Amino acid sequence: SSFFDYNDTIASISTAWGEAGIAIVRLSGPQSLDLAEKVFKGIKPLKDTPPRYMRNGFLIDENGDCLDEVLGVWFRAPKSYTGEDVVEIHCHGGLLIASKCLDMLLSHGARLAEPGEFTQRAFLNGRIDLTQAEAVLGIIKAKSDEALRAAARTLRGELSKRIEVVYDSLLDLSANLEANLDFPEEDIPYLSPDEVLKRLNEISVSLRDLASRCKVGRTLRDGIKVAIVGRPNVGKSSIFNALLDETRAIVTPIPGTTRDIVEGMIVHRGIPITFMDTAGLRVTDDIVESIGVGMAQRALKEADLKLWIIDGSESLMQEDLNLADEIKNHPHIVAINKADIPQAISQEDLMAILPDSEIVVLSAFDKNAIVELKERIVRKLIKDSAINEGFNATARQIDMLKNVQACVDNAIASLHVGEPEELIASNLLEAKYYLDRLLGRSFDEDLIHAIFSQFCVGK
Ligand code: GDP
Ligand code: ZN
Image (cartoon, rainbow, N blue to C red; front, side):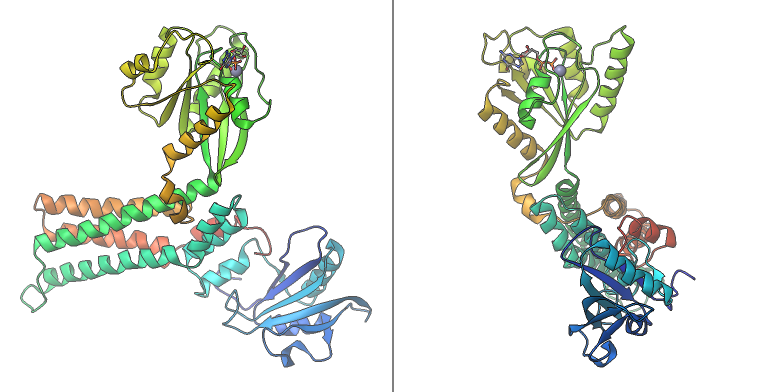
């Protein structure tokens, strides 16, 4: 059947697999009521029951045997999750009975729903836009309260509403520019370059605000990755263990013992933080050790933040200076460790080589200092106030926003150097193209498939 052909009716078990109090089998499509009728027997048929009204009944198999006492409810198109006729049969939990119910519906002609197909139909029927559909996924996958709230904000349409405001002002401006171009002699209010610039700047500011909120949302959902780096024996594994509050990495005084990367995750203030304990980045002849070093370098690259550990009881070595050089252009925090024993270096020594860095002095054995370190890590990447303003956003959405921003910034740059209005108008058209894709007003099958295939079956 074609992509947009919704003459078929889909069915699946919409609750989690496994034993539970109840399981819900869901149908969506024009035959939903007819199909439900074949397996559900109540005092009255569902079709004579008002929509959204729970009807008590029995699940009856092909031999007329009663399998379970169940509840049936239906939603009339377009006032349902998918925008189509939807039926839910609530049977008792346990995989067997729900599977049996589903099998019977399939044998009567329902088609097994693909992952995310209910939500996909909701999107294609205009019940929700693409940002909302993706937020459904965010809600399912949320690992913390904060991430859940960010997804819920997007699902309520707060992100789309803000994008639409930008969209409208962009469209307005672009229509005005085009009209001036096409009918210069007509009576269309002429926008001075100053006025155009003013409006473009406003759009650019809104876009930046949106992008930063989306980044917060993504951080809440996906968390942050922190690579712990430093030369051997400075206390990386000790700090790693303290941060995780458990003994996971091998802590040892022999240089080069942590050969590969050990990972551990905590949730701090609603944000999942993954710590990676990396092998010392020494150049080495030992093959096994050099593999560890290679992995450490890759982990370094994908980390959102680098936590550079220094042994405060020893003076800085060439290796330290090399590391300082490597991390200075990435988000990082410097921790001078072993503050509990006599110190050979001070905070000032480090400020001399990394004047703009955040530097902490601590001991791996000091619990309070470790909590404070977690705080600093979170604050480094996400502003306090922002935690409650995040929007659930996917990498795709952040990408689209970046494209829109680039178009608007190009338009601003063109205006500054006095380029022809045609060029500015075409920049705005391109921006509109990306906004259309962001909201899902224009899309292709591949994109839709890529998004909805991430859902589980039954959603
Ligand atoms: P790594 O090679 O960087 O992972 O360093 P380790 O965590 O294995 O620690 C090396 C040695 O330093 C071990 O003997 C630790 O007990 C010791 N150490 C780590 N942190 C501290 C600290 O804050 N103070 C003191 N006194 N010793 C520490
Ligand atoms: Zn170690």
